[in-house]
Image (cartoon, one colour):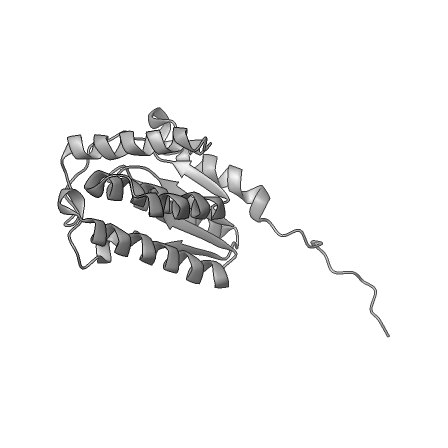
Length: 189
């Protein structure tokens, strides 16, 4: 199962991702986190990003997702290709060649969870702190969600403390083993 946390920068996706991973690990779920790849990008990001930088980010996001999904039962993605594409569109406009790929790849997420814009970004050494830029990315994301008729799980900005439990309750029925809890007492001869 692949779960993507989507939303603009600075809204707490990374923190929530680690909280969810801890919750799932306590339930013995084999989970891996695909961390935000933009932080490793050797090219400019944030408002100074370029088409080439965003292509690097999308390629590396997909590669990391493939690698994690090949060996883990659950993959938590700190971003998705869709919100990464928002930064590409912001930098260079709509990219028809990428539109097809993004539409294809978003179908690989079993669950998308939209982390709302509920707090302004703070400086973390990498991400932009401009609230206007954060809002522009959120508006692009909302437009792309609507244009693709996606139905992400939408978190209530007024209930931040309940997000982890809500998502855990949503995911666990889909992640719990379907094997019998107790092995058969019958042994074959």
